Length: 314
Ligand code: GH3
Ligand code: MG
Ligand code: MG
Ligand code: MG
Ligand code: MG
Image (cartoon, rainbow, N blue to C red; front, side):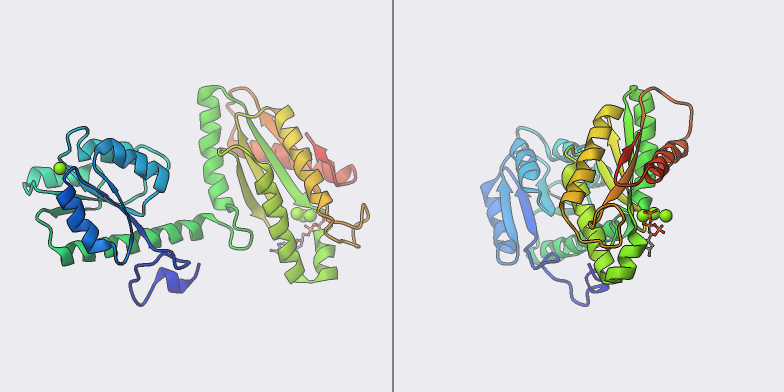
């Protein structure tokens, strides 16, 4: 992502990467759908739904970038559809514009209270609706980019420490409340200073990208998190995972990275890049702080280094 994408000189129909934005049009009257379809089909990827239920199905399966939502529909009204979309993890951030024949103040207020970004009254003015859609798509893509800039590591594209710290606090509280285990793996590349010295900083950067990708690929659950904690250190946060499970994931990561055979003649273990890992688990509600948890993993990592590197301690 670039500054140019964040502050485009010209508002574009396309998403970063040149893909057309996808708009979902929801209305129980085919004639209304047709009017909106004609307004957007030339510039956007348009999908349609003729009921509330279908709108939910299409939203989850096709992930539109914006929804034009009718209020009055026989099976489920637009407010209910909006409420359900806002409550779901994969659809909560899709901008919704209500399109309705009700132009009273009460309806308009309700639309905004339900989480809509805008409100357009029927009969629609083609130019107005096109302009508003364009504006909201731009705002959405900018907020997506900002979220990426704030929470992703630019080099490796995994989450960054800021995101990890926030998630750790949340998962710590959840584990306490639900009495579920929570595991943490701290990972550090062995002899990485020598790697940079021998192969150069650019090769070092490439190596970190490979390591991050292998860690991400090894984690299977959607709730697992990997983040770059600092320079050549990564952390994995594994909700609902016991120590034995976390140890086996850690070993899996270690073996996979070694098996990449990334040359490292400066290593005194093998002539390949290896990692050391520290693992800890909180398997009972704790009064301690999340920070002590990190400290435990770090202590284990230190032990793994001390015992000769290329190993997991937990
Ligand atoms: P150990 O086995 O004890 O972990 O030794 P080490 O050399 O890996 O540890 P040390 O902490 O001494 O060095 C870490 C090195 O990681 C130093 C730093 O230059 C390098 N590093 C940190 N961030 C980056 C980065 O973004 N890119 C590159 N190429 N190198 C980085
Ligand atoms: Mg209707
Ligand atoms: Mg280090
Ligand atoms: Mg160090
Ligand atoms: Mg290191």
